[in-house]
Image (tube, rainbow, N blue to C red; front, side, top):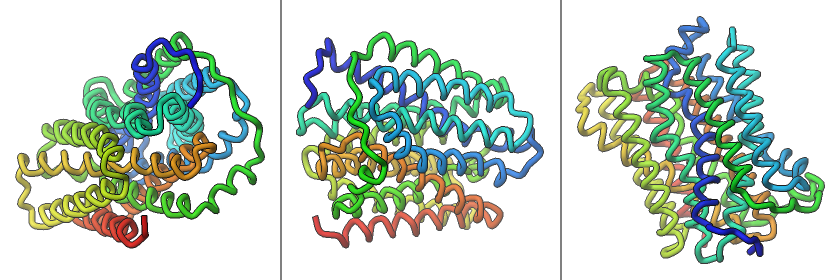
Length: 384
């Protein structure tokens, strides 16, 4: 644990969480206005959805590379710079005249996000005792899950009232404002030694790390296969109810994330993950059945959205806790690798969702259920 003079851990955690909220809003807000974006750029919804895939792929590849290139930078300057890049990239996305330009700005945004989130998590983990580490990570990751609660439905509302370009413009403003807050409150923390990327990635040979990262990819792939296309997938409940459904998903995501931090500290990561993946598989299976039968009951779908969100985002704190416990000295790198795995899973899910979109929502939900079952089997088949 670092010996850092922090006046109030809660204030610092709030600032870090606001930063991850800005990053999460940028990553997830596109799902709220995907149809409007596709129509404006004169492309299909599946093609527009690939902007999410490209963001995820750039994040997954860029995270460990940026962790190496920025290792010696003071943490405050790194976090502030990353948020400024995120803001400028979103401004570019808001002004993009075509899909190729949008894709390029989404890559830049992903690099800003990749530089911020892992380092924010590593700073949080380094400032608390080991027995409270999962809770600290849950607070910081909570910014991402709150973004799913507010960012996506607000993006949906903003797209309807202001247009999708204005929604991305608001994300740009939010990023810059949070950057100013991080600069004002974040204490000075030194960077680490410069370690070659090959040396850093040697941690991938650790058996515990090898078991954790593929599971993150599977779990996030299951969570995001249908969620990336949630607006068209939820058309059966009525256009006016889609925003509420997305908000309920976010409520479940926030609740699941926070509770999983406490549950991991008390009962262990493996038990939390087993319950989470089982609930996700069940929820996706029921949604697939409802979509296939046409028996869409808004109240029932709303309840399922809460469980879907909770099961999707309960996995991040225990996964990060397992990684950091395996090699505490490489906390920043391991968190960045897990972030890469998260976005690799999002990319996988988005590709699968785009491929199954034309076949109907039941196929998307069914594919997500199969991935969740694979994650459950992976979790239960490996020893502690």
